[in-house]
Image (cartoon, rainbow, N blue to C red; front, top):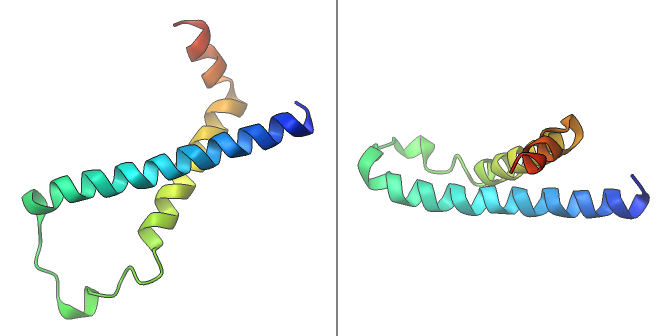
Length: 80
């Protein structure tokens, strides 16, 4: 893979990471009322540094790279 190919792959991975963050927000909003839990005051600032968003982004980013480098992405596309 060329340098331009790696840059494109990183862009795709960043896009997947952002998509996972957006989906995480949407699903969290939809399930919040169903699974809502009254948390103590000490927990109110647990996400001040956007830990959930960073983790969701990294999961999407890493998953895209994993599927690309393991060959699963190519395998799936070839069988469609």
